[in-house]
Length: 287
Ligand code: CLF
Ligand code: SF4
Image (cartoon, rainbow, N blue to C red; front, top):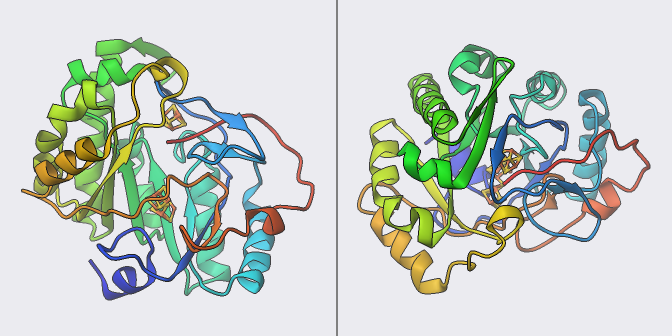
């Protein structure tokens, strides 16, 4: 991991870093159906996938300028939704603009990885410094319990069939990105009854693929998984211990909204930064 990422990224170190990030909610659409996802536009709910508005790549440059004035601790410009960053072209367009306007900011992208394999070259070209891929299983049988469909090249593939396509593309895509020297983190949403015993296998595989850090995110029970329990502390600890046989774990995740602004866990300037009325195009979310 580069020194720049270690020192200036709030989500890639093992210790809480006193640096901030802004999420630019430029990616409205998604192409898979996570069973725990409920994408909404909301000013009050505080979890991944929730955003109060969707903005354009051009608007995001003005937003960034404003955010840096209000919160100079911001070192990272991230895009984490509210849908998937590769389902529409806006995230990569935004990173290209940021590269020109704010060359010193770390550019961070988060994706479900369905299109990562085929778009790897474009992702690398966009100049991002760090990538997060959400991998909830590497076994299609497990994935199918967490994801109901993928929408791929104009066709819908349900359950097991979709899970196979998703996992294949995630693994091949991650390898291309790590081979290009970009720092990769993998997020897994922990649903103890479904993938609790599978964490070790995911961690081992990710290490083999060159992933540098692993983030186990406890489920927020919503949508189809509303009846699952939120993982207990001992379950989260057990999952991290299993994973750490192979790979370092990030332990300070804030389960941020897609329009979060500030130092995670310390300050939140989303209201001030996104206060100007920008037209809401669609309602979406990400995890
Ligand atoms: Fe944002 Fe994600 Fe980049 Fe961080 S968040 S795109 S890697 S800059 Fe960080 Fe927030 Fe957890 Fe994400 S605390 S939800 S891990
Ligand atoms: Fe798409 Fe993210 Fe929702 Fe999954 S959690 S369906 S990847 S927006």
